[in-house]
Image (cartoon, rainbow, N blue to C red; front, side, top):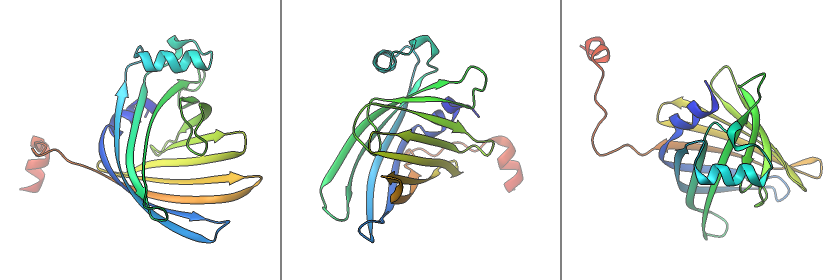
Length: 187
């Protein structure tokens, strides 16, 4: 599976439940959010702008994913929102890995270039180093409408946070038709 195939499978609206373990505070925190994921074409103005920001030839981009979220965390009960564009630049020798350009980071809210690896199991792993922190996030599908994410954030050489999310896709009002092969198996 390519990274853009993974992004295409992720397109839609998701309800996310997160549990974060803040190791320095020895506390856990719950959170929930609505996540909207859409794919962008390689020539989308947002993709071109981010490539130029990182001085990467936009022709190397294979597309992007725009991820928008709106939710709340348990500790502060304040609404948090975000919008990030993820632009994969596949390695020419191995397209299952490459650079991942973001207009906003995960652990620090600054533009950042990290790396990604598409595993043979279909999981996407993101690695990002910031000025003060580094993060690793693994995202995979348990089923077509259930995504799981596990991440760690390290500060100053030690773990500071670990989190786990389960994300359930919001299904459309009209049910997806069952393919003929599946109908004959269930009869």
